[in-house]
Length: 421
Ligand SMILES: Cc1cc2nc3c(=O)[nH]c(=O)nc-3n(C[C@H](O)[C@H](O)[C@H](O)COP(=O)(O)OP(=O)(O)OC[C@H]3O[C@@H](n4cnc5c(N)ncnc54)[C@H](O)[C@@H]3O)c2cc1C
Image (tube, rainbow, N blue to C red):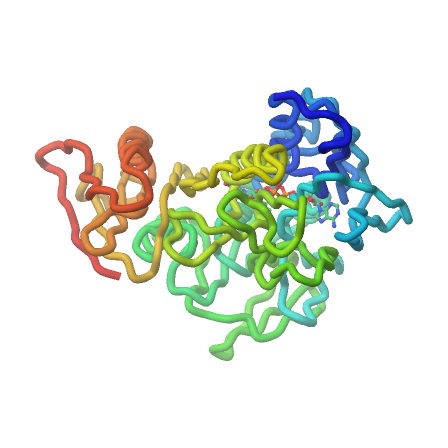
């Protein structure tokens, strides 16, 4: 496919993360010969964001190890934050005072961390963990710290807790849910992973909310909703992220939770604009009826590619961009893998790989999430082979009306629990 100048000659990509780079590469692969400009708010070249809570935080990876390589001929402009947009004249305005005209626009601005109002994030010892600068700042603070409190036990919070513990620092993790990673792995697996983390010496304050954060003589004091408090030298606020759409001022677009798109990732209400990655909310058959966002690394890659294809299709129909959610984490000796959709109302069947072990997650387990007898999601801990088989089966069956996925053949001694919740 070759694209003439005049038809779609100048493409601007706002954002320079996973989705942006994937889109640029796909444009190149499809033979787009016009100008591609990628505006990145950060000063660093595009990088592997998951490394911020892993190798970049422990120091095992240097920034250069985490860079995303790309071969597409792109004009990458770092330190350019889009601040405004004129969709009629097709111009993006940045904080530098520059204007970037486009024939096609790809929005790939990801998400930003959120903290409760009034938390003095950025003051010494009170950190968020989202980008490479956050990882450096936190790594520096951890060198001196003795006691660290992590607020929020999602993936990022638990990975941070893992790094803290591996540095032999005392770690307390606080979350309003009674288990960890509730949204990411479901309540059943989240409870088993929490048990594992306890065995590893992490102190848990689960089912508790932080009411206030204040400076104390030795660092920070967190007052919890049960009247108790936690003292820490360093606090990590890991309370989730919100799509970065503040600059997207198009009047007719729905920016209530990311940019609302059609099934091919065209932003609704605006011409010649597509979105990809954590900022895009679109009808994904894997999510059921309501459009949803997918803040995951593999999703950002696949959406970036799909958005590029849609943009090049112009006014012609473009294929839908269904996407099977899948993600992973490695912490406390647990290889956690997830695919499909998990919901609090699912029935959950758990198979233990080594029944009788006190630490079920460490011994290996698979949790299949079912609704009306139909498997919708799978979570595996230390069971990579079983996960691969199940994920492949689910993907082959597709998101709609897929048959029940059965667990792979298991040794006779294996026990299967049937849990609801
Ligand atoms: C610490 C951490 C660990 C993670 N670990 C995992 C993991 O293990 N597995 C997994 O699947 N997912 C993980 N994720 C999630 C994953 O990194 C994201 O889903 C993915 O990076 C989303 O890609 P994206 O391109 O949409 O956005 P991003 O990677 O966030 O990139 C967006 C870019 O746009 C820039 N930007 C924002 N606003 C503007 C603007 N107005 N103008 C110009 N540029 C702008 C940002 O600075 C950023 O560089 C992790 C996330 C974090 C924060």
